[in-house]
Length: 428
Ligand SMILES: [Zn+2]
Image (cartoon, rainbow, N blue to C red; front, side, top):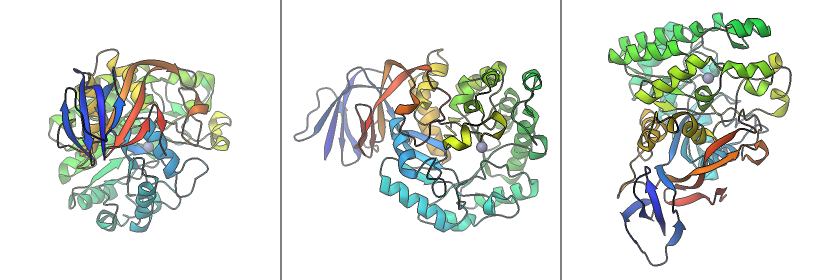
């Protein structure tokens, strides 16, 4: 079975046709034809490799009222993703081969993106003893990314052992960097604003101290470390220093930390409550520069759906977290492409190539070239529209972009040559 994409602009360059056959890009050129092929008109659309998310909360098993593997997969496909890493903080926690295989199978059944389970670092995310890392790596889910995300692996000796353990099978520990003894009662970024609003402060040092400790440990052990949702200017400086010394460290930034600041807390609208919190304008600028120069490797959505009762309450009682999959690319267009901090190849690198490499996903993050897997998206960069939370595919509604006009619309997504999204609509 074949698809011909007519007149797409790979990486924003000259318009060409692409022929997808049996899951592979089999030809790129002018006026391609193939008997019986489906034809997709892509005039004016930018073609990019399918996006890869290192940081998605799909909530299944346990909180299917907030999201399921299927609804989250649909949101991902609509956002242009072809692979997402599903975080381990489910109920039960994904800390055994059985649970990661369950999530992996649910992803296969949904069939909209490749759902790649993340394994917990410690049993029950409790930070006391290591989970069955080797069994998860050897399972059908072939786990390579391990994270207690939502919690920090705070014990340095345990973190060191985790790094030593995953090194044996080329895994990576993805750290939620938050020194818990510095964030007791934290509600928002610590500063003049938190004092004035009367909300408990989450100091930048609580993140930076853990990142500094962990890059030293990773360097000492010679293992791979990934830092989740970097949010401060100081963290970018530490990462730059560590990379300069040859430490195998990678990092991600969320779309919301590229766009929004702690000024959002002035509304007391808990949709803006997130962990780590929204920071200052100076932090936002440093994060954009860090992503532009490659100090920060990837955009990770930290898509965190929450049911209404967990989110629509007073600020202090609300759960932290925001939706991210469906608007991630639009936010990157707004914050990185419009100000010319990244070009289209840069977007492909930070949202597909590097996250796929970090997760060791061989068939994602590949170039748009003949012989490569047909995982790609088509984007209308000229489209602008206000975000309507009611129109989202996620089961939850906690989008921080509600009512905000953003550029770009994913028109189509192809997973192994099969359309998962066409005309901006999911096909399953
Ligand atoms: Zn986290």
